[in-house]
Length: 416
Picture 1 (tube, rainbow, N blue to C red):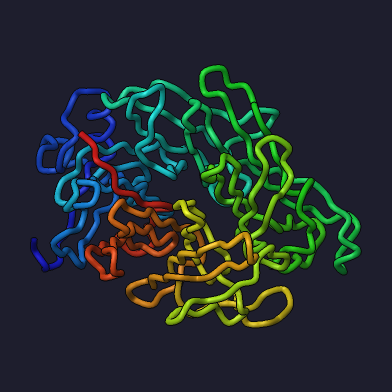
Picture 2: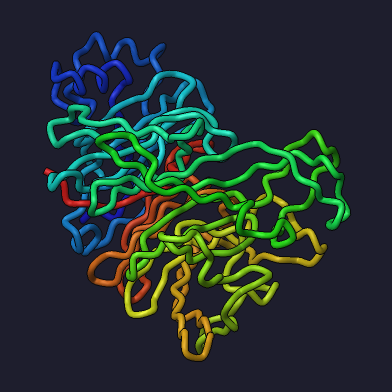
């Protein structure tokens, strides 16, 4: 496979829309009619991807196409979702979202026994977001929409379809809290994190969990704002997963904690990381905790791997130098951690870590997908990179979006 740098050309937004409607094949931009290519100077395009490293074995574990959702504030670029061939040379399918919106968490899932494409689309990812989750079939036709219930709006951090054809989604809500015990005001605006399980067919809310009902505000690592009128994002829920025993893993960036939550009662069964960890944190030989002596900081995307193993995208940065206690908290780079939990000894051990190839820090977003051979596909969040590592941690594939462009998550999946 070629080792030189080369760039994937993206579809124009107009061509992507036409391809979605079945007018044009969703292939590389070379197949776009001349009129559409001529309009590219004024029509925003999905940003191109430059491949920096491409070694034998990349994409082999899943035969996997790349799934990305590029987003940028630059008006020259459209935001949307995109499937690229395993070597990223061709655009398999591409769909731009309307101007002013963005897409996130684009991936292949299973719904009603069939392979589907899913993503969130809306505004305000990472804040008080407003959006809808979409399900498309393998002929690129919309088959379902999922909306948050009980007056909430779906956030783009997570859209996970379960084996029961329900959806696990997230939402944010602004409320007020008395923070005098923390040295804050009695009427501080705060942002609560909410988890919902939705029946996709009926839209019924089957389960709802609120961070403020279960987690003390004192667990936050996020400094209080200077004004009571400035909402304090104390929790920042950014993931919900099904653990191997059916419970829910709820992740909070701003408490540095992953919570194991009972799906029946909502009670927190254990906490990993943060100020109230249920586990003693250790590192295996050759591994190391961060400078705050924790496994991770400002993290995303905990994934249960089975046999007591979990992977976590460890940001180690939130764009601020210090924690609320004033102690240096982060490593100088982001990484992917693999952690082994021992419930008998109440020990959590860092057994593997894979660092960002250029030693850079992602101050937000990010994910790590473990492949069946033990390799990793990593979306580096706010950094403009997508990488794949082999089972030994060697870098097999590395690609870069233009400056200012990123994909919240990245995956590989076998697609038609």
